[in-house]
Image (cartoon, rainbow, N blue to C red; front, side, top):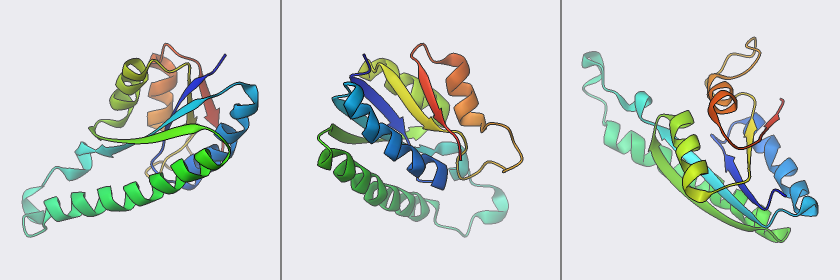
Length: 144
């Protein structure tokens, strides 16, 4: 039923917790997992007061760290028999998640309820809420 899964992650604690749920979906017939990390382009907008900061180097470091973390996730998923691969995109996270879900023709999106930038007091993170509202595929939201 859910043979191709999109697993977007920002490598936050909640999104990493979701890896265990993705692994369990193998027993429900999952075969392939697309691990997606989106570099939020809005965090790379340069205000005038920060012109001394090398934002290209900052972006490259963010990509390097996320790539290392996501490749570890791909290895974990492969160890349980899932065909997993990693994609990195740059843009507005929820839009890139929805676009990737469409492009990859996934049957399920598994997402953490809150990311790194969301306040604990919020009921649901803004990215996961937007994905839930706008996705045409079923969305499995993992609580913290």
